[in-house]
Length: 79
Image (cartoon, rainbow, N blue to C red; front, side):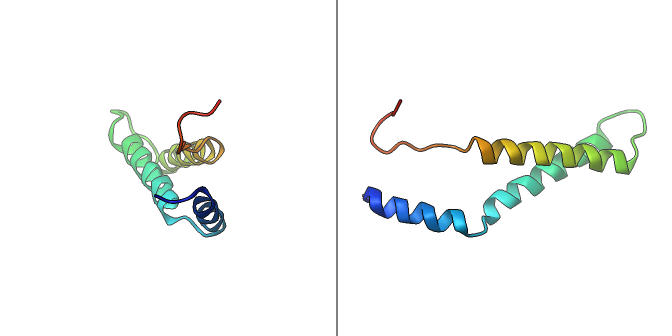
């Protein structure tokens, strides 16, 4: 089991490096929302409008993910 100091060092190196996993999540949500906006409605939707909706959804998801990340508590729940 890792010690807390090792985890602390690992978090420091992770925050400073570019996180491709998060970027992949944001691109995936953008793609899904954009394609859904183009395909699902029965009336015609312009491509530029669908891309705008995808950008809004992707950026909103990114902001929420950055501001409220998942927290992992090692030794129980902390208040």
